[in-house]
Image 1: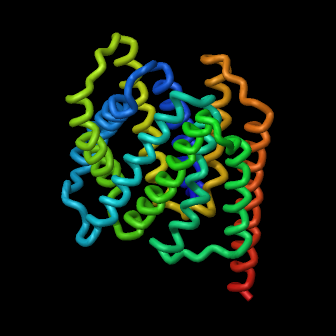
Image 2: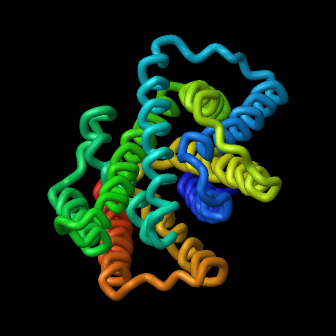
Image 3: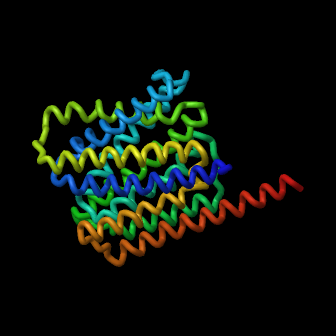
Length: 294
């Protein structure tokens, strides 16, 4: 029988592929407002989550005391999506995704405040090192070209807060399908006024791309929700970086995108730090288990 951590790893890999595919569909949808793209992405996820709730016979009502955390998850998640979509349309696909994948590092920081899950000095240093890697991708300067990358990083910060809220809700007994439904319904309602006021007519292929983005995002959303329900961020975050590999391959074959040298170096730093932290956490856990047996 699979352990909780093994299940979490499987879910996070599934999530990584889903979100990489979502980014590809968002890019394929062409020049449409981020709000419009987000609306269709969340509409599909909301419908799927609603069906899942009905099939499992789970109540629509959230667990007592969980509404503030659900609102935090939904607000940060919505802002994270909008920032990510803005970056996807303006950056190399792999760049946009690696900046969004700063979220596990920020989740370590947010876990301190929301979950009282204390990291140690090495884990906090890893956060700083990963942030340094992100600067290689952003390439700070006074050029307007930097703005989309900064928005992409901001999306990673919001996503880190959202995923921490997901773990907090899971620890409080909130059902995963209800978490996804609440977030998706919230985001759909937030985007609806903008859609009505500034709707851009779409070709059939654009609509198909957005529906594909919604389906892929739903796969990613359920995957990440279940992953963080089974294990903390510091134990599984390394596997989330396979999304960058998926995105780089899709970007190369579909859009002829080749990241520059500094961006690739940034990928190496961020992914390398993540791998080192994963190995460190495993060694730390083994020592604690050995100490407990002793």
